[in-house]
Image (cartoon, helix red, strand yellow):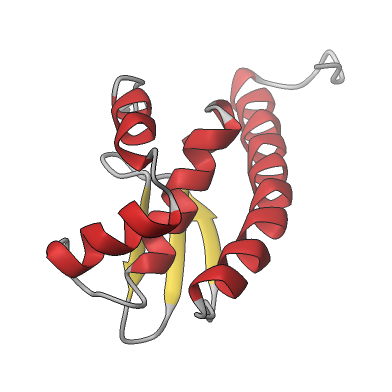
Length: 126
C-alpha cells in the first residue's frame, strides 16, 4: 500500500479496511444475484461491517444481510458458503432440519466449507 508519508498508522489501517470492504462488496455483487436466483429469494439491504464473532447475519423480518468485513481475507468458496447460509435464512429462520436440507440441496459441500471457515480466525478483538 502506497500512502503519503504523513499518514498515521490509524489512517493506513482505515484505508486498508476500506479496500477490504470494497473487495468483499465486489465478490458479494457477483455471488448474491447468482444465489438469490437459485434459492428464489431476494435480500433487501446488504452491508459489510466489522463483526467480532460472526461471519454474517440475516434479519429475516426485513430481509437485510450483514457480512463480516474479515470475509474479504477468506477463500472465495468460504465466502460463497456464508452467502448461501445467510440467504437460506430467508427461507428458514432457524438452523433446523429444513434449513440444513436447503444447504444440503443447494451447496452439498457446505459442511466442509463451514469447517474450513471456522478453522480461520473471525477477526481481531480490539
